[in-house]
Amino acid sequence: MTTIRSRAMRLTVIAATVALTAGTIGSAAVVAQDDELDGTGVKVDLITKDNVNPFWVWMIEGAGAKAEELGADLQSCSGAVDPDPEGQTACIENAIARGATTILIAPANKDVTPAIMSARDAGVVVIAIDTSTEPPDAASITFATDNFEAGVRIGQWAAAKLGPEGVANAKIGLIEIDPSQPLVGVQRSQGFLQGFGVDIKDPSRWGDEDDPRIVGWETGQGAQQDSVTAMENLLQIDPEINVLYTINEPTARGANQAMASFGVSPDDVLVVSVDGGCEAMGDIDDGIIDATSQQYPSRMASLGVEWAVRNANTGAVPSPEDSEFYTEGLDFYNTGVTLITNDPQEGVESITAEEGRAICWGNP
Image (cartoon, rainbow, N blue to C red; front, side, top):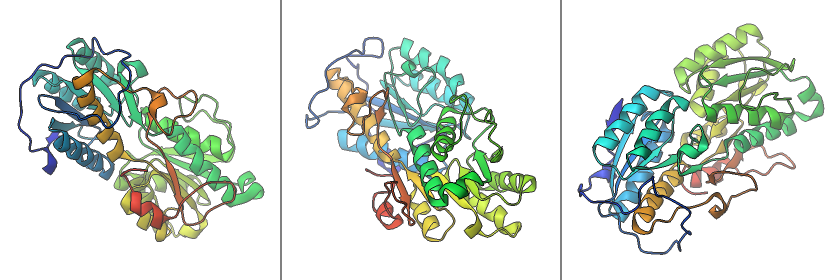
C-alpha cells in the first residue's frame, strides 16, 4: 500500500461531524450546481488502484484541486499494483480510523466489497469512481466512464476500417489486465468484441468466445513491460495477428515493442485501446495506436469531491439521470467518452489526436 498527497492536498485537517452519513444517505433531490459549497470539516479519502499509472495520477490531481477549491481535507491512498484488494482494504481501514466522512474509491475487484460495507456500517459515505463496486449498490453512486461503450467504439472503428472482407478474415489478439478479470477490463474487452461483430457469449467474462478469428488472450497488468511479454506470447501463437485490443495505452506501447522485436510493422496491425491519455495523443500521431476511447479521470474525481462536500452540506446525492451523457438503463453517473483517431471512418463519430490533446483527461 502506498499513501501519497498531491501538491494540492496541503490542507488543514479540521475535526467535524457530518450531518448525513452513508447509513442515512437517501434520495434527496439534487440541488442547483451553482450553490455555494463549504468543505470545512469534510474529510475525503481517495483510494485509487495505484499511483503510478498516469490515469490515477490525473485523478489524484483533479481531486486535490477540487478539494482545495472547496476547502475540504483530502487524503489519497492506493494499492501497490492493479489489482491490489488487500492494499485497498488497508486504505479503507485507515480512512475509517482517521474519521473520513466520505471515501472515493476505484475498487480493485469484489474482494474489496467487505471493507466497503464496513466503512458504510461505520457511517462513511462511499462513492465509487471509474469502477463500479460489486455489487453496484455497495456504493451510494458511481462516477465512471461507460467502459462497455468505450470498447464498442473502438471495435466499431476497427470494423469500419477493415471493411467486411477484412473483418471476416481478421486475426484478433487481446491483451487484458489480469486473469482475475476486474470489471472494467471485462467491460472494455467485451465491448470491443461486440463492436467488432464477435458473439461475446457471457458479457460478464472474457475468454469464453469461440470465434475462430480470435488468436488468444494474454494479460499484462496494464503495464508496458509486462505487456511486451504478453504480445510476444500472442505473436508466438500467430505472427500474423492484424487486430490488437489493449486494455490501456501503456499496454499498447509494450505490444509495439514486442512487434518491433518480431519484425512486425505497426502498419500491419490495427491497435486499439482505451483511456485517451495525453501521452497517447502522441502515440496516435506516431502510429503506435490507431484509435483509442478517451475518458476523463480528473472529471470523475472532481465530481466525487464536489458531491462529497454537497452531501455533507445538504444531504443531496446525484442520480445517473443527472449526467449529460446519460443513456437509458445506466445505473451510474456517466462522465463521458470520446473516440480519438487520425483516421476517421464513416458512421463512427471521432475527433483527431490534436483535438483530443486539448481535452485529454480533463473535461469532455
